[in-house]
Image 1: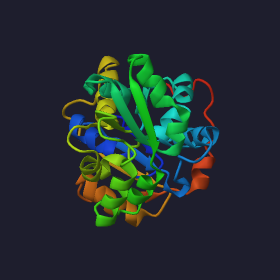
Image 2 (image 1 turned 90 degrees about the vertical axis):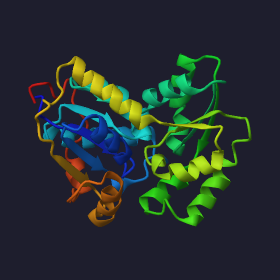
Image 3 (image 1 turned 90 degrees about the horizontal axis):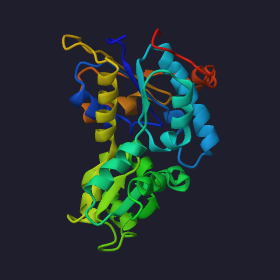
Image 4 (image 1 turned 180 degrees about the vertical axis):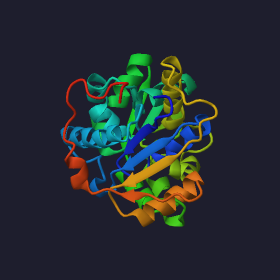
Length: 283
């Protein structure tokens, strides 16, 4: 069980920002990652549809004998984390609670901004999580679906992108926020442009860092960490085209020989929704 991989899922390549942190904090752990690029974006879709997609991907990951699952997507976390936690006996974590905890701890004035997909913003998941931790916090949310498209099209570093980001984030007036949650795992790939847009007085929160810290603690508590002499192996899958995925993933993760495999959407749909009490530690 200890040597089994950790499963990561996202609507596209954004979750690779969480994987990068996992490679740093958990170098002995094997990883199976699936990006559902064929059905991207998740943000505008109904939460119930996203929940079905997440359960299908989870079925695939369970077939790879994962010992834990990280929902490395804010929209998917909002739509499906409680479902997966109720149905699975292995550890399952999402990114919203972790990001909220970091923001509350970092913010001096408890003036917190959130940028995310339309689905995450409309779910009010961050608002609920932050308010639970800090009832006095002022929360300002902004949907930035175009940022996902920019990242998926590998245009994160262009001058046009810097201009687009600056114009979009001008929504936040000077002094309105002192902390900004990157509420989509695609957004850390735009961090230089976001930092330039909001200025040095606003701290950025990448929820992926705290999410990996959380899964590391869960694996430690349950004695599921891979042994220190375990040689990690990684597998990457996408429902989209593999060449663009490989280009972005290789550049971001710096893993030699990274080659993603294609899996058809029909292959995921076949897994259907999870049954109650699915995979156990015997998997």
